[in-house]
Amino acid sequence: LRPIDVKYMYEIGRFVPIVPIVTKADTMTIREASTYRTEVANKLANPMMPGIGDKINTFYFERDTLERAGIRDHGTPVPPFLVIASNEVNEELNSAEVPTYWPERRYPWGTAEAFNRDHSDLLSLRALLLKEALEEVCKSKRQRYETWRRKKLGGLKLGPKIGRMLMWTVVPAAICLQIGRSNVSMKDLKKYFTATWDTVHDSFVKPKKNAKA
Image 1: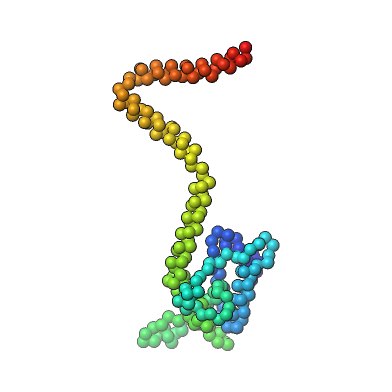
Image 2 (image 1 turned 90 degrees about the vertical axis):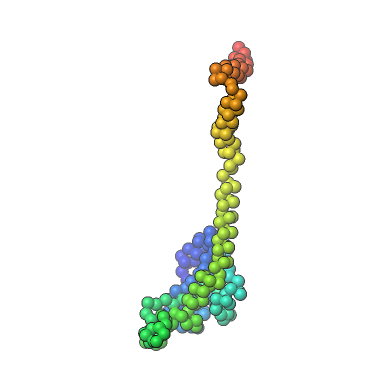
């Protein structure tokens, strides 16, 4: 596991929990894969790298959910998940009376089967993310969205903005509506505002002139 991989997962984990997946598990034996899974899990829990002060944020799946998805407890941490993917299929099973899609990778020393739970977590991972843990994932996503939304709306300080909007839109409209109902002429209204402006202007300007004198 390269330091850049750990750093990348850490940065993503600051915003959203990750589901670590190790691909090309067919390059390892079953024992090597189990050992590597433990090493990666320990690295995620304790990165011990400059600039990373906490464990990497991985999505937490309930044990019951993992069991329903068919993920076996071999005494090794889950996640990460080890998967095998292949475009090659078993031709015998594919050409049988009841065709079966069975992807695999053939090597001189043996065959790695993508749907064999001893070789790969692909079937279990598919069942986990698309069926058994789907509700958990959606609920977690909704909670993160609501937290982000409250944080953003709380930082906008909408109170003063709403006040200014009401002052320049709703209040003038209400005044005009009341004036229309009172049958006040525009000429009288102009005189009233002119007199009011002169009073306010004199109360602020004249004291300043007298103070200068």
